[in-house]
Structures are given as C-alpha cells and as structure tokens.
Amino acid sequence: MGMTKRSAIAERNTARIWLMQLKFGIQTKMWERACSRMQWISQLMYWLTLRIREQARSHI
Image (cartoon, rainbow, N blue to C red; front, top):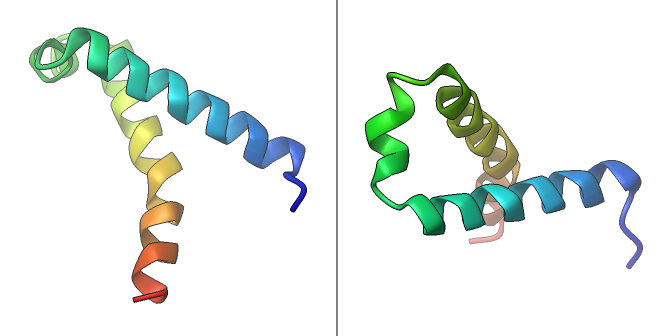
C-alpha cells in the first residue's frame, strides 16, 4: 500500500516526537507547562495519534 505525502510526513513527525520523549522522558512533562514549544509538541503528538487511536477503536 502506498503512503500519501501527508501521511508520510505525519509518520516521520510522530517518530521524531516519540524519540524525543524517549530521550527526555519525564522532563517532557515537567517542561510542558513552562515551555511553549514543548506544549506545542505535546499537542501535535496528541493530534497525530488521535486518528490512529480512533482507527484502532473502530477495529476492536
């Protein structure tokens, strides 16, 4: 199955966010309120994974 350009970009961004969370661990949560960029990244990760969660829920 071929990926669209948009889904490929979203997948790459999601992978980067997951790697960042693995690297920084709990620090991500600690800085989320203080740093607007971390808050933005957290929101981005939520929106990127929301569709995946909805799809998984529909296949149960």
